[in-house]
Length: 93
Image (cartoon, rainbow, N blue to C red; front, side, top):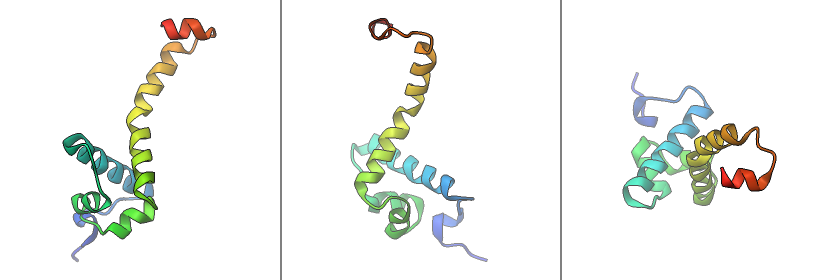
């Protein structure tokens, strides 16, 4: 049986689909500094409507992509500053 969407590799769940969409958007931004819903859809082998199912606007896709890019940094920062309660000391660190 032939699968058309997702270039034949259908995500297991919505979380995986969202991760792939954000990953494709991040790759396009890294390569060209910009991205469109059409580019993301083409890279993933889906329609624009599929992207809009998860992200209703290009802005919401861009926000999710930006947030996912800084998540790891914020986690590391919180781990390093977790024991510091004084804001000025945290800034210095």
